[in-house]
Image (cartoon, helix red, strand yellow):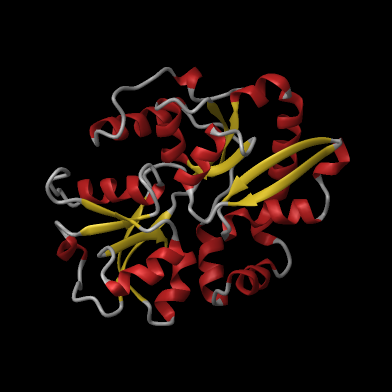
Length: 284
């Protein structure tokens, strides 16, 4: 039995992995795949890949591309969710901020530098035509729990996180949702360390084959909406909306998509330069 450790956020996007693991789908080819939750998100997983704590990650596209450019010895093997991630822009319920334009020059609460919440704060600021050097500040709060505790106390002024995972905290009156910012590219990819790819390509291919078979009809599985609502504490109508918007993938990023991501990271001064496609993507 070959051991593999994969990391991901504990969110509904990754339920297909949990189901495949529950049903021992990977064991059929002699693979002992184990899952590790990373509530801190992309920056935390990038570090785990670098430190060889995990072999693979289900991770935000722009964050993984940036970290590979910055020296992470991993590659993207395929897109996992091809639909954009819908980032909600949240403030504390007791905040005086009413619109997204009110946030100009305030502090974005981010999980860590290099995370999705950090990168998307730049994308949002650019969309609003803010001065990226003078209108954008940051407060590191580690994860969603850190934002729930920190924002009402003034530790950060706004927090960007996936809209549907954060909605229960809007419904209960902790946050207010004042805007949305979708990613301009596919939201999640699967990344694998280079040494793992070199040493066991066939096992990686099989892992992808299993998860792609799970996502192929995931949105129409019987009672999947009820399962998600119960597991993640969400309202059934929100889950159904999320399912209607979510598209899975079994393909690689296109050259055009990767170019768009690299160009945007470069424009935002989040990378020093672009690198060749074959240093970022692994095509089988």
